[in-house]
Amino acid sequence: MIKIVFFAIIATIFLGFMYYGARFMSAMQRSKVLIQKAMPYTLDSGAGFSMLVLGDSTAAGIGADKPEDTVPGRIADELNATHVENYAVSGAVVDDLVLQITEARQTSYDFILVQIGGNDITRLHPAVQTAQTLTFILKTLPPAKQVLVVSAGDVGAATIIPPFFRPIFTKLNLAYHAEFAKDLGAEGITYVNLHEAPDNELFTTHPEIYLAVDGFHPSGAGYGLWFNAIKPHLIVQ
Image (cartoon, rainbow, N blue to C red):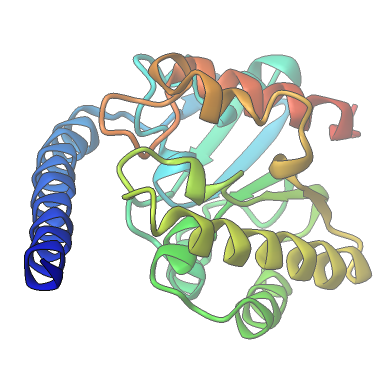
């Protein structure tokens, strides 16, 4: 009897891994399609308000149907930006910001947006070291009236991740928020903790609306929730 129960447990675990493995591979294929389709939000309509955007796939707007629905697109509209450069790359980690900064065409900007950290979390990079590296790199940014940084709201809310791993990523994500807020705040950089946003729980309760079809990136509606959290912190006039 004990052997039967043991083998039943092993079989259940095996089938669970097979199920979530298949779901993960399917979601990864959908994610590749989204990455190929995405167009980072950019704008060049003359002199006026200038923006520089750096970061990962969330800054590139993966998951949104239109560039205007992304966080950079919504911020640009809110601030009446006339010039937006976007060098965000899907899959980027904090270290990749070094190269992105070198691509900036202007010597200064009115507003700089950095969306980074989600891929560092999925790769289990330590929070303290990553925050220190980010702070050091951001010191090399061109001058700006405001620099605003956001990271992933809660990687553990992504349905692409098997349920038994989600608490691990949520715990690390919370550590990132704490370290980023502490280190960047000391440098006078605006950091918005998306995990504390009033609507953050909607990613978990209604992923079919606020996550893209890959179950990892925000949808256009999801980026809208992020923008709602960011909007009160926009201080550039």
